[in-house]
Image (cartoon, rainbow, N blue to C red; front, side, top):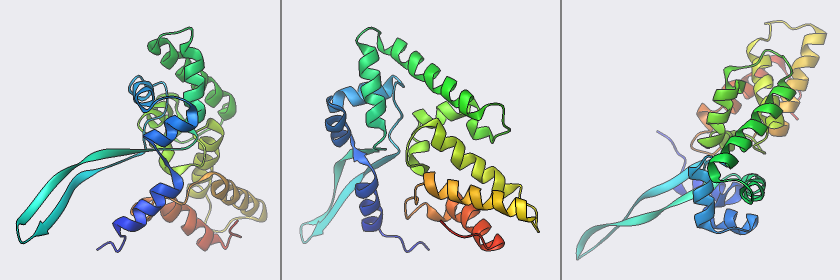
Length: 212
């Protein structure tokens, strides 16, 4: 049974993400506009939604009261909002979404530059992870550079030989440094199923890598 508490998760969310209102303030728009841009897939989606009922009991009985949903966004989305708003001066939101996706896909392709990658870096999947909030769970900046560094590190860990040569060990060391540079620590309740716990930490331990 998990020993992670709701308080620990909430502390992580407050320290790592922005609420919709906080994101709106940082980007200079209204919360409603953030919601509108998100719905149109002009910007990355919220990574977390905190929802549920408030339960309270007394001698009068037990009560369950609805609590408004709180959405948590990666801070780097403020940059996406600002870009989308600039484009919205001359395009409708459908056009903005098309340009945002095209620009993202072009930058991703340029940075991948023909290398063999994981499926997560194929354009369709990578963009799906942008819009559903997945990238916001695991990297420090929702940008192709960070996505590629993290996923290529994972690919290196997965393909490492049992007994690497000195040159192969250097590649592993570099991959570990790249992973730590770009990857978030992950939320307490999701750490055990994350790439950090499942792939990065085992590689560090198995090969005796110097942890950055």
